Amino acid sequence: MTPADTTRRSSPPAAVVEAGDPALVVRGLRKSFSGRTVLDHLDLHLASGEFLALLGANGCGKSTALRCIVGLETPDAGTVTVHGHRLGAARGTEPAHLRRQTAMVFQQVHLVRRRSALDNVCAGALGRLPLRRSLAPILFPRALRQEAMACLERVGMADRAAEPAGRLSGGQQQRVAIARALCQRAKIILADEPVSALDPAAAEQVIGLLAGLAHERGLAVAAVLHQPQLALRHADRVVGLLHGRAVLDAAAATLTATDFEALYAPDHRPAEQEPR
Ligand SMILES: Nc1ncnc2c1ncn2[C@@H]1O[C@H](COP(=O)(O)OP(=O)(O)OP(=O)(O)O)[C@@H](O)[C@H]1O
Image 1 (cartoon, rainbow, N blue to C red):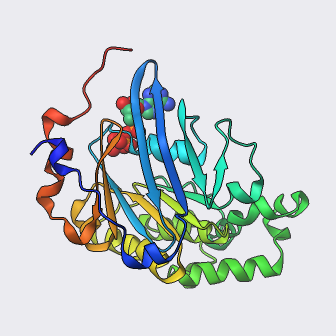
Image 2: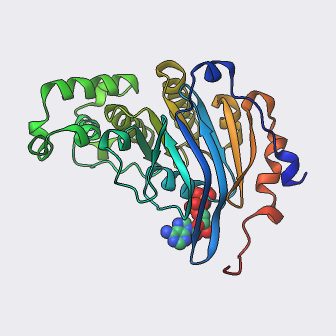
């Protein structure tokens, strides 16, 4: 099967179409590092209520795509539109409430290990707290603590709220990181390999949780995965990247494991390029 054979442009699920404007639209995203093309006119869209799995071989540009979308990298070209608002290429210029609409969850959870799970979740709201309130956890308002506890409840971690994050298992820490994204009140969650360090049961739980947040809360959720079977079980739609381009974009229900072979075929792995 050639990469072209894997290309399927299908409509998103009916519920997604009814949700109206996509939460996130990426058009023509390009990014090079030292003259080496990593993203090559990448197009991507994500609707509210949709759980999208982003797959592809090591080095095909998945993380770079998410990092460009949230502004951790500056794309060379292309546009990112969040809920109808086009974000600037030089990020940080858009209103803070727009920036907060998108939260990123990483494989490395970036929790403060010695602080409680609850404090870590409260930290998701720092961007909307007055500065003096955000300086010390003891100043977190009561209402915020209640909201953070509700977020922990949603991810099944309320009973560990007082536990230092560093004492939790990898899967539990990942769930706390997702609760922190909820406390940010993000409408879009982008998860970069959220389960790569987890055992199969914990991975299933975390991916099921992300899918649930999309389907039950109407969040737009995209996760980079290295497990096609997880994607097939939980995702509404799968996008496959090859050399920084989306070569597969199809409803998960229409795919089988063989549809992913071209993404991982050795001769299709990113080659060392001559700088352009
Ligand atoms: N800041 C950077 N500077 C230079 N090169 C980078 C930088 N970030 C990423 N790259 C390169 O861009 C390419 C794509 O990296 P990226 O992390 O996006 O791939 P990926 O698809 O997420 O891979 P993996 O599945 O291994 O995490 C790689 O060759 C990587 O070395």
